[in-house]
Amino acid sequence: MAHKLFVGGLSFSTSNDRLREVFSEAGQVESAVVVTDRDTGRSRGFGFVEMATAEEAEQAVTRLNGREIDGRSLKVEKAKSPNEGGGGGFARRGGRGGRW
Image (tube, rainbow, N blue to C red; front, side, top):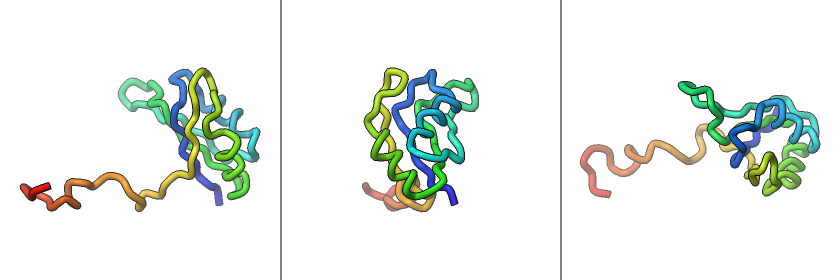
């Protein structure tokens, strides 16, 4: 099973291949994807990398978090699963017309 990492702070010029190249320094990369805007096709400045093992994922976080790539400082961390945090704030705060 691959171990997914979130990569923020990407330069808008960073490609999927460049992302794979950088992360291959830490181990076997299963996939590397720069997220793009569906309307413009332009990079959104972040992406996801899947490493082959948990050890390689840890190594990637340790070695690459804060490292400068293509003129930008990377933020690398374990990706959160869809069930963890974020989103849905409206429903949690009392729904319709509730006081905040």
